[in-house]
Image 1: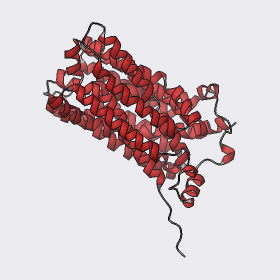
Image 2: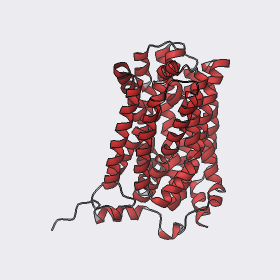
Image 3: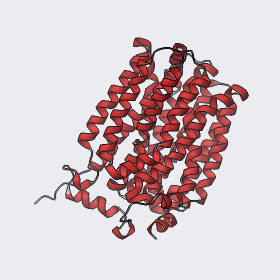
Image 4: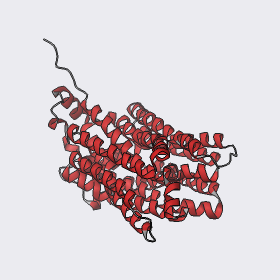
Length: 426
């Protein structure tokens, strides 16, 4: 008699979260690609446009922790499906703003609303990882999820540029909205909060997953309180490091296309192509980093596989970004800067694997607090980057990111995820 086949539904879910991750970044990066056209239509300068981006990432940061708690209470399947519908609505709203004196206020409000909805994405995804993915596979799972960031941000420049050139920037936002609505509908049909709820999952896969999760006595029966979360030393250090990570990453998401076009003097078509390179590097770095993290954790322990790998990767990013600012040739500079972005993303899975291990049943809340650090960094760079660029030059803007990365790398040397999990249980 044949053995029942072991399904791999957990990887189908991770694969679709990759898609949602890509869609989320399509919805946020499109404004950076269309930024020149939007600024011309609404008579905005770089600093004013920066405020629009700041309110988006500020909202995104502010609602991380509440979004994580909501995912813990409602369940990742429902809240993520509702969030994607929200993204689609607020992505399309900016296309109906009339050109008038206070248009910037309306645009800020719309992007603030988009940030609220997008805040759900990664805390909810980490909730799925905590329930569906054995600890030994979490590095790869998170690496694949965040590879969607690079993929989404990478395909956005040519896609948005093409639609803009043919139909105008508003059509590019409508397209982004429709893609998101379709992806959200598929997720609602496909996703479940736990393996035992999913009709496609075999009993052998349920057993494999549950055997790789923390032992029942190691998992708190109640959700962690906000006091427990904010008093966890290791989580606060990781959150601080994620602030520096978010600061550096958002330069690529929010300003890199404009930097190439306006500062380096690259034409629109070539800017779209060159600006893909950092995002391709991010996608590769995220997947590779997740795989490496699992392999090293298995052979050398979690502190080496999660913490030391993250420290080395962010430190390398600091060096490459700093070198990229000193190179006059645009093509060579982009290669160095793209390599810096890829190195940064080698560390991505470490943040989310450690927060899932610490949070367990409260993984949504814990990762939401951590991601609030990254998005606060993004909010700061959204405004500070054009300010520093205007007064001190754009090389100085990238150097600020490089210096912060050096501090973020050093912070990981003081993190011990094993001790932190023991503190949460006690």
